[in-house]
Length: 279
Image (cartoon, rainbow, N blue to C red; front, side, top):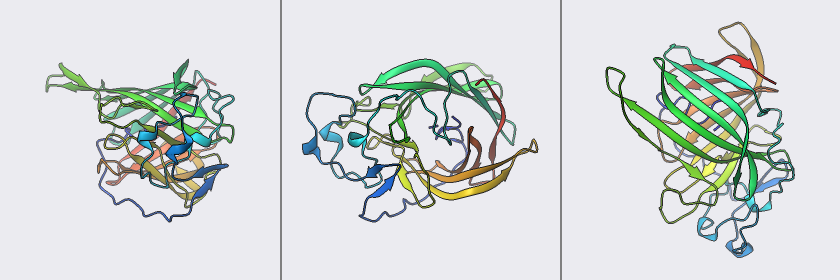
């Protein structure tokens, strides 16, 4: 784990089910970007940056951020305090149980997604020394400071008991304004981190109906955490869930200037930052 920092998949093997929190009909405003239902009449077929396919806008939850209203002048420069992505940075995480290691690398490369230049981040999960997930995530920061999760290309690897690779698959892959799974609707992006996170903020991180519907709630600000290496951090705390995958249920802690420093699963499993290199 979206994601940096750990994406929503970083504790894929250690999560429980949860019910979606009901949201009032009034729009929430985070970092100048309103959380409202989209009006499909606002969009044309010009495929300009930020345009949204009308087929994706029907009956959207109010927690899907308003992508059409966002403006992106320096989209690949991501300097959000709680989710900075300077190219060349590498963050390494390890589960307390010791059987998983996650390496998150902010790449110098970018990718055009829905007409917006996005920063590419590679997220590899190792279990017992073997790569079990290799994912490329794409992020963009709008002019208000919100960081958008624009898509991901996921590869999971399946091994036999002897460690021989049996197959690879691509669960949960998606890209803004595309229908990569051929389900008849296109994907919308969401926030991976608002510009000014406040306790009670709720937002989708991605909205691809039936394929990728992760969302988060900010449940604490100024939360102190201590890691196994003795370091301490003042963080914001989010509760990350999915309407589709009941194994996605975790708490993440984001520190200023770093991003995720800790993720906790329902069973007490912890994934902690163990090193950070680069700018």
